[in-house]
Length: 345
Image (tube, rainbow, N blue to C red):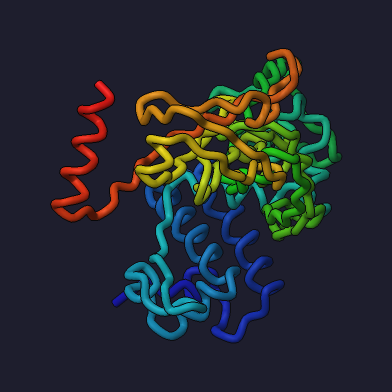
């Protein structure tokens, strides 16, 4: 038999979102380990957090109502039929507590004048305490409050925690070789989670723009500061896009140079030729070759990719590698060619 999350919070199965939130706050205050010293208080506090995390989420609640705890944690159901399974860590209980009580006017006043603001606890103001917990300081102060309303305060305050390093969320951005040559502008929508003034977590959508500079290479990184999730007690997040070059059907890029293969028949390889070749910018250039050497590429200077200003500007080169197409010859033709070649020596 799985856990009865409704019973844990003391609400009915038809409870509204506000009723679930109210029940959670009541039960979490009652069983928080810094306030309740019973041996099972920690376990109860974690169960309360787990129950709230499930029942406050529409999708998780629907799965739980249909399949119970076993189905929820086993990965059954889900809006697309591919729910990955629910997991609850012990640290989640404290995170939920911090999120729920931050900005709540009915509780915020209790934290007034309690010292420095520690971002690791979602903006709660705290005093230093032997237990080192912001919740301990709050509960101790409530217990010490006198009937007349005056409270004892501790003069020594905890030092503010150093700012946390941001987490960088990376995403690949696939770009064609033509766009990398001429520059580009891409608009994208990103979604992230932020905490509202009421303490609830919501998903917001924002449009961002990337202006690609001609000549950018694969591996170029574009970072948007503070565009990731913004949640109390969590490091800020940056979004970083990494340029990935799409494969091209004709050209291969190496640094600022472009390489391509050009098939030529044997007769052209022997006698020389003139051909029109389309460049990366769409223009057509005529190349004239007298002697074809498959091991040495033909170089068209200034027909490659744009160079950065620090590399002198301008453009790289286009290197054309010749691939000789051998014809199917009769025995007589082979003999005639041999005679010509040997006779020229």
